[in-house]
Image (cartoon, rainbow, N blue to C red; front, side, top):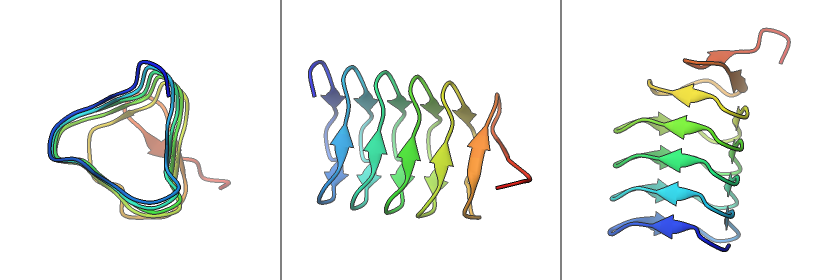
Length: 99
């Protein structure tokens, strides 16, 4: 989309949306059917699993892996790997209990 920036050595799967103003750092792996919302920022060497949604204005720090089928809420900050399916919100992110 308009104004999206994708840096070198990034691999993007099929059916992905990199929305307006999103930035994707170097050496990332964006698996199939991922949605990276407007204004989201992914640092370098990030892996995002299939069918994951990254919310508007969220930040994913360097060297983080997010497994498939997760939702990252608007404005959330991911600083550690996410290894369990669910919805994550806050700064830093935490899993919603009722998910």
